Image 1 (cartoon, rainbow, N blue to C red):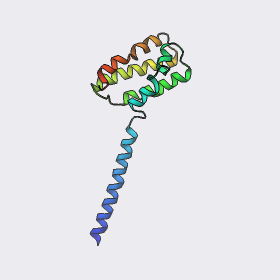
Image 2: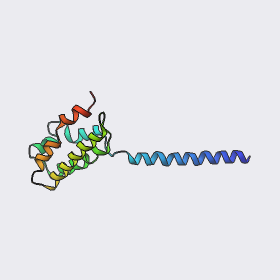
Image 3: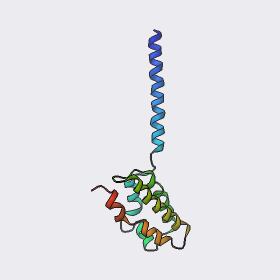
Length: 126
């Protein structure tokens, strides 16, 4: 009888430990996926990105850009070199924050960093 109780206790302890591990891993996941970020900020003729490039972005647009782009470096690239991904997405984040802060050459910095083809040619799956 004691063996059954020990076994049951062990199973319960193991289940609780597994639950903590799973919830800890879920907390490490980025808030937004790459696909979600692309749809929210970059896709469409009236996207946040297009409004920025046309010089028609609002404060809310810039805030949204920084919110979403800040998560890109936390994601793994869909394909390609993770170090290169981190470098490009961090440069994009730096440029987005400069835009938000109103830096002098921020638009030129952002335009260079937000070169869609430069990332898609390397990291976007066919």
